[in-house]
Length: 134
DNA sequence: TGCCCGATTGTCT
DNA sequence: GACAATCGGGCAT
Image 1 (cartoon, helix red, strand yellow):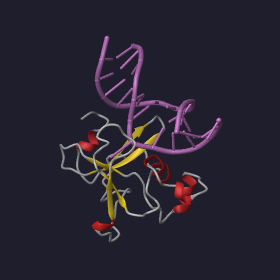
Image 2 (tube, chains in turn yellow, cyan, brown):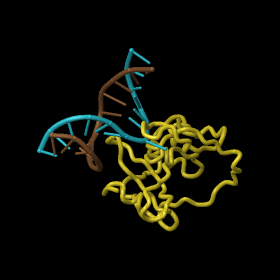
Image 3 (tube, protein in one colour):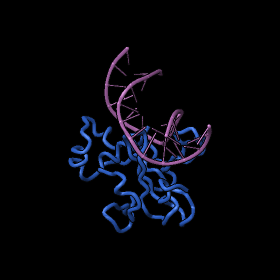
């Protein structure tokens, strides 16, 4: 645990937003009890509402390019370090509800974009969904 | 105090 | 498919 990643060791259900590559932010959800360093990186989302606002934040010609990466979706959502440690159940930044996706529709593959533990099957997405990151 | 590199992205070839 | 952009954290001196 360091000062930078301390929120990942904090209360679950909170946002963990960190700055990387000198120009991008990554949005994670803390997923383990306090004291355990665990979080899930949101690598991509399917834009449904507020697409006009997202496009203003991140002008792109193809909507498929709007939120199809961890850095991209933070730009489109306007997320930065100010949102670090926000409560994802009761703040301005929420993760709500869920589509009724059955486990059989969810694919698990090896992780991408990293060197450490790249062989772990910890990358999850809805099979056939065109909004998945690459 | 110095130095390397990062759950990336966009651009150019 | 290779590479530059860009900067603060984290580890080595």
